[in-house]
Each structure stands twice: as C-alpha cells, then as structure tokens.
Image (cartoon, rainbow, N blue to C red; front, side):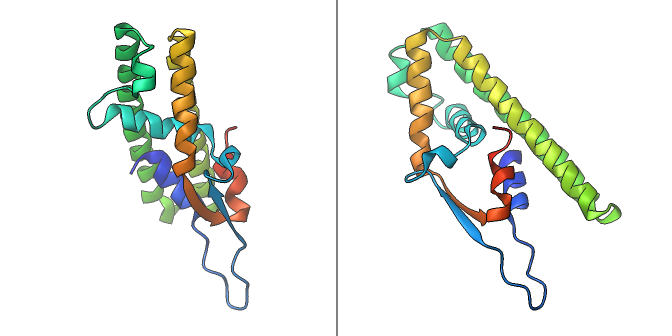
Length: 168
C-alpha cells in the first residue's frame, strides 16, 4: 500500500457515529461512470506503480511512439515515484505513531498537509515525464492514464470528497 493510498484510506474512514447520530452520507467515486471524479494524482500514481512493477514495460500504444531514451526516462521516473511514495508512507506512519500525544485536529492537519504534498510530487513527476516526451508519445501516455480511470471505484463519506480530490 502506498503512502497516498494509506492517507486516502485514513482520510476517508468515517468516524463511528456517536450514539443517536446518523451515519454519514456516503458517496461513490466510480471512474467507469464519473471519470471526472478520479483525481489526476490517483491516476498517475497508479500508472507509475504499473510501470515500475511487473515487466517494467510501457503500454504498447506508448512504446511504439516513444524513443528508447524516452522509454527509459519514463521508467526511471516511475521508479523515483515509488521511492518517494515509500518516504511519504514513512512520514505518514510517523505522524500516526505520534497521534496519541497530539490533539486529533493537529494529527489530521499534519496527515492532510503531508498527503497533499505527496500528491503534488506525483503530479510534478507526471509533468516531468510528459514534458520530456515527443508530442505523440505524451498524448498516448496521457490517453493510457485516462483509460485507467474506468477501473477506479472508492466509497467514502461525502464530507471527505473535497479532500480526496485535492490538490486539483
């Protein structure tokens, strides 16, 4: 589980309703029906995980358009994102480990700030990759990334939707 995934899960966990309080209203982000609700940090984090893992190959639609140097740069950036995510995971774990000694609002704010910072790092990696590609390869990689939205589905309290979409 990546830092971004952990933070997203933590931010989306509904607090148990207090006695007599109604359960929170839930919302489902389903990329197959509402792809616009799947944030770019999530899309590109997933793409980088795919590229850094398994056979470490580009999708065929991208591979046929990217030069060997461009392909190597994409994989190198995907590897760097995975390392950055591991650092983010450690930072988030440290915040959670110290949660008992801090007010809940402070822990929440620290988790939120760190999560958004890590998401921005993923978006900067996306920008570096796309800027380094020829236009056709950049368009193909972007199209591949967008196609992954259809497989995304997450349910969360409606009150957390704005945070889930950040920093976009």
